[in-house]
Length: 491
Image 1: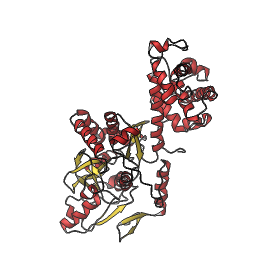
Image 2: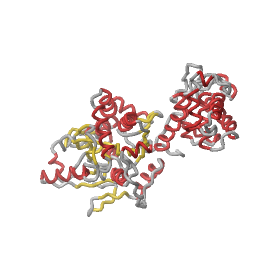
Image 3: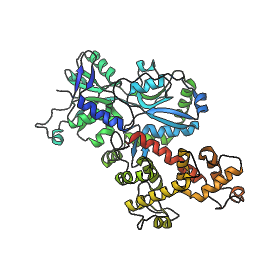
């Protein structure tokens, strides 16, 4: 079989040919990661244990884009690792900073040089890996399976003849070519299998940037014959590729875990304590089934076109958003984050207060900024961006710092600039910095829920549910960070 790579037979490493490299690099550069010649070594940072992480205020976790770790679906961050990380952050009282890293080797390197605190990606626990990292308590166990096309797959791929029966005995892999992801636990398992069975497998490692999910897809479309995957990962893929056969196990169930540095024992203890508690709760297993066992949901994700691994879209309205974001000087992904927070990309959304449409404009605001029908996506986005432009003009003379000004604009979009001005006056009255939102004006916005503050003489607009704009600003900016990791600026 002719492989789509150039093979260095001394190392078993597969180097992509120029067209494949170009395609892979295009997809990766889009999400803001660098691939190409070996980068300059990153300077080592002292390993942070739990006390240092608490002092910093956030935990840095490495993960990757995949249908089971982290992705965006209809504008919402999702994934098995992502949902568990959210729960871990709540348990530890820490924000989670995600670093999206392409390969397992790069994740381990980032952990070893202090750039991340935790690898939150499902990792097979092996002896060689234990020498480099400290594994957490087991998340789950799953066997490794051979991924191949079924005997009737020609019906799906227009092959000239029906394929032979799938391999059921691993001995039948003798003389066959199997491609696995570089750095995965599948390579050593297949090597051991050759030793155990006395067979020879043409075994190659694909570049680490090509995920196991991508290799499975290539088996499904016929460009590869065989790969290996954890059974639960392969099960997800069969929802989209029904011609796959994943029935042949090549290992006993393998423990899967996350990893921390050997120099962070307190963090390891805290994560393990959290996991032991989580695994006593039904929700822990609901999350697992959601991403690994519910075939209908997996098929919907794969078929909907909002499944963000590589080149992707956020909503059906991306083109309109891209068209209008430049008029306010915004990255289109920031505008998309605001729209998602407002309406979940539902053009017929209605709020309890009467706001309507994608950008949840109140009737008077919609009319003032030109939306005759706020349920129409284009009219809503046009009017909403005009309103944002007005807010930017308002705050430009009042808030000198551009980043802080954005927070004032977002808060004003949510609650109205009058309430934000009240919070500024309260901040000034109490000795806080009235031109800084973060940690300053936002504190007094919260206090507008309390009578002694909303009845203060400097307040002109009375009571406000101050938690809402504070949470809104944080939610929009957090979602924007997710979007910048997953979606290219110019797509």
